[in-house]
Length: 400
Ligand SMILES: *[C@@H]1O[C@H](CO)[C@@H](O)[C@H](O)[C@H]1NC(C)=O
Ligand SMILES: *[C@@H]1O[C@H](CO)[C@@H](O)[C@H](O)[C@H]1NC(C)=O
Ligand SMILES: *[C@@H]1O[C@H](CO)[C@@H](O)[C@H](O)[C@H]1NC(C)=O
Ligand SMILES: *[C@@H]1O[C@H](CO)[C@@H](O)[C@H](O)[C@H]1NC(C)=O
Ligand SMILES: *[C@@H]1O[C@H](CO)[C@@H](O)[C@H](O)[C@H]1NC(C)=O
Ligand SMILES: *[C@@H]1O[C@H](CO)[C@@H](O)[C@H](O)[C@H]1NC(C)=O
Ligand SMILES: *[C@@H]1O[C@H](CO)[C@@H](O)[C@H](O)[C@H]1NC(C)=O
Ligand SMILES: *[C@@H]1O[C@H](CO)[C@@H](O)[C@H](O)[C@H]1NC(C)=O
Ligand SMILES: *[C@@H]1O[C@H](CO)[C@@H](O)[C@H](O)[C@H]1NC(C)=O
Ligand SMILES: *[C@@H]1O[C@H](CO)[C@@H](O)[C@H](O)[C@H]1NC(C)=O
Ligand SMILES: *[C@@H]1O[C@H](CO)[C@@H](O)[C@H](O)[C@H]1NC(C)=O
Ligand SMILES: *[C@@H]1O[C@H](CO)[C@@H](O)[C@H](O)[C@H]1NC(C)=O
Image (tube, rainbow, N blue to C red):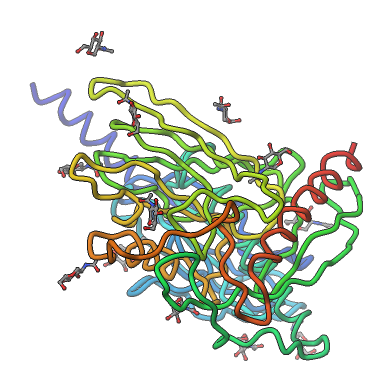
């Protein structure tokens, strides 16, 4: 009896002693942790070795890759002169459990030169590739923040556009509510280089929008659980995705949809001004005893925000959308048209408190808000669809 349990204890003790070395930056200035992702057992220690330049290892969260997590660890800045070639400073983080640990370099935070925005991130015990919290998804979210910061810097150095007015407003497509105006868009033509392929693309840019540059030629799959565990939710609530990425909705028990809408009409199917309908999974009934879940994919074509909702109503007549069952791709989180504003609008317009007498929209352009502002959201919706198609052609045809 004693011998095996002692052997097990010894084995456990050996496993607990693991030291995992991670290089932060490099002599040639690479903005990366190496390795980028590791798995570790409780009791292991991750030791960061800071190379030349001036980096940090700061704990963040999956949802917010480039910001320090409340109460998270932080090495602080570790400046290392270019002529120092050994005795690099270290910072040790004990691993206490198997939950994922997300880490970034805080140098040049919130500027176009952000190290985190250049993809200088690291993870312990992240999800496997293809899962919602994979390292790839985490790093892409950081890169998207970097692209957004660069676009902001570029647009603020250009002649000050009068259209960035954060206080401009318009009226929702139904319900008579005042909402933030649509941003006005600028058409940008750029040469995109990804993995040694180059091509020219045209996309619509607006304050805070990242460049429509694919993160990879293949695209990343972002998995979104619909109605997981009986909840009226999409999980995650929104994703940051690059062109060519795939949003893979996985439908769980009950009978939900993923239906494209518009910010100004959160619980109605999107219809472009030219009458082209938006994308819609249709109803996906899943039996209570199901163990395999149907999926439905949407390819992301540019970086314009995409808004989604569930069309289903509960037996009592209440709307899933009005209960906040909404989702977004690339919401501009730094703008008034951010994800929480969208979810709040869905609750206000279609929640159980919504006025039953709220007038229904007229005509077929149901997703088009009345053009009261200077930046007609209707025309920008049309523009974004047209540009989306233009981008597809540019991205998919010219690349090959
Ligand atoms: C820079 O350093 C990293 C890590 O040491 C290495 O992987 C990479 O190949 C180097 N790049 C160049 C251009 O030397
Ligand atoms: C390291 O970077 C931080 C933040 O940018 C800066 O405040 C600090 O002065 C830098 N240290 C050195 C020695 O360059
Ligand atoms: C690095 O350079 C600085 C100034 O250029 C010098 O004072 C220092 O001694 C050098 N350090 C090493 C390790 O060579
Ligand atoms: C593990 O716990 C120690 C002590 O509370 C803490 O300093 C460290 O940051 C924790 N590690 C992680 C990855 O949170
Ligand atoms: C699923 O829901 C049940 C009951 O609400 C809860 O106890 C459980 O923790 C949930 N599981 C997950 C994975 O969210
Ligand atoms: C939301 O409310 C509008 C106006 O009352 C209605 O036309 C629409 O069908 C509702 N959508 C859902 C999903 O309940
Ligand atoms: C799913 O919901 C839709 C709309 O409520 C309904 O028409 C359809 O019959 C439902 N499917 C199943 C299998 O319950
Ligand atoms: C689920 O239940 C239905 C009827 O209640 C049955 O016909 C079906 O075989 C079951 N499916 C599985 C995967 O158990
Ligand atoms: C969605 O995309 C994933 C990843 O490419 C694939 O495995 C899955 O089969 C696709 N689902 C559908 C319904 O096409
Ligand atoms: C992106 O383009 C493809 C190919 O034209 C299309 O099937 C897909 O629905 C488009 N995605 C969106 C969100 O419109
Ligand atoms: C998000 O939207 C809400 C409602 O429009 C607004 O109060 C909040 O300031 C916005 N957040 C940011 C960062 O702009
Ligand atoms: C509905 O109204 C009740 C009572 O006024 C309030 O407590 C609740 O927060 C409201 N719910 C929503 C979704 O607005």
